Figure 1 (cartoon, rainbow, N blue to C red):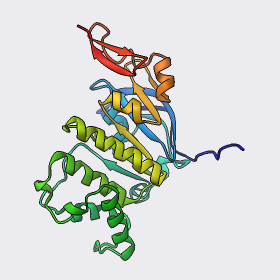
Figure 2: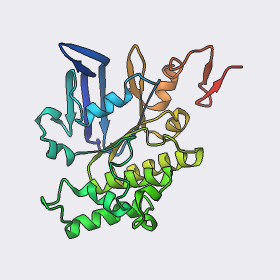
Figure 3: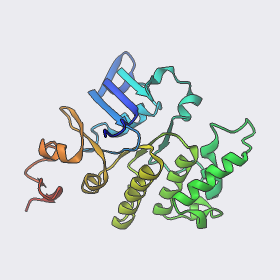
Length: 264
């Protein structure tokens, strides 16, 4: 019996990302092609300044692409209104919440904005979604605390909970493990893996924790100054795409262990 084919949730065709500056386009990365499916955890890696955040913001509709096509659930991204796109994609950025005076419950409830009335009144369905997000991220005990009272790790879990409350098939996270210690970096990535397996969502995250991403991701994208490569971690290792991420005279990638080490 053949396994059921998973639905493609995000697809890029010859995508070019960057910025518009007066009359010229500033290209950050081009010729990007990939297909992400439901129920996949995808790690996005590359050196600083290579364009990871630019790509994520473009996929989320937060900035315009320079050229190419982006499909969200097999529909061109350009054909979505802002509200419609908010029903398909939720985003967790590295920036802290606009007001840390919000309680955790209030911040997570903001994830329901695409579905609430103009008054922002939560329906019973909205409250269930918020409660489910609290449970999934184990943040129930933080619900009535102010965001400024939280540690970085707690605040990151709350940000993920807000995205879960938005209840979109696609979640995009820009470096969700930044400023966290080793335990909390591993905890956040394992949480994302658990959410994917339990909810069948597509979760795309950028990270500098390449070793952890290799262990936990279903697929990965490696961005370099020459090209972007998308495949399973094992296939990317075999093709040598991790070897070119950093200068070889400083950092070595061990294909056997899937880990980086500093050359002495």
